[in-house]
Length: 113
Length: 115
Image (tube, rainbow over all chains, first blue to last red; front, side):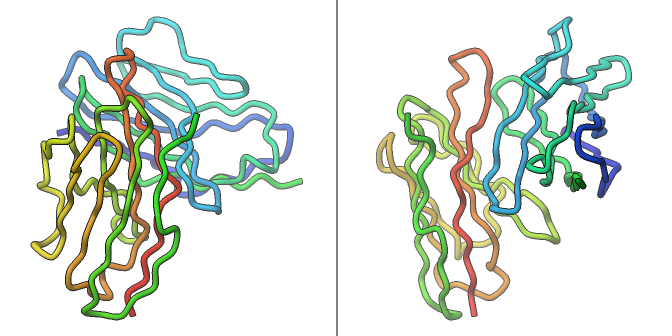
């Protein structure tokens, strides 16, 4: 069974600064995927970025990037140049092969002007 | 392209009533998932289908919950009879692992309130 741990219940950042959201995972599988989702106050779950366990490069998607440290089993989300619209709940999740996603409990990010 | 579509977006009902939630996955996706989100328990997988066949329903909390997928473009989650503790946001998600990355795309959710 997989386990996802997000140790930061809440994070605060000022607009235009970068912020890192932590995520560690626990799996014995060799092949797995790591995902980040954003859930704004409106409630929808928005897919942000993906990292495969065999990917050698850290994933990037616009202002989002992952700091993937396989040996430490961590995949931290870095949001550069924070915007007010980044205020949301952020979930880390993982799967193995085509199995189901296991989600962390989430981190609430608040961006202040 | 349309994303995952769920209806209704909000549902308020009284205890004991039957509730039916509906989902239309993204066209071409062959996996469909039903999740429930509450403050106390976070996101829980209830059941998922592959090619319209239920694969794992171990997350379905009780016999009061049932899900069907009669065809590739439609699924329902039914609660009968509903109870106040069923109040939650119910998400439907779909994916197509054949495209290489097994990303699940979520619908907007149905916020269910059982009085």
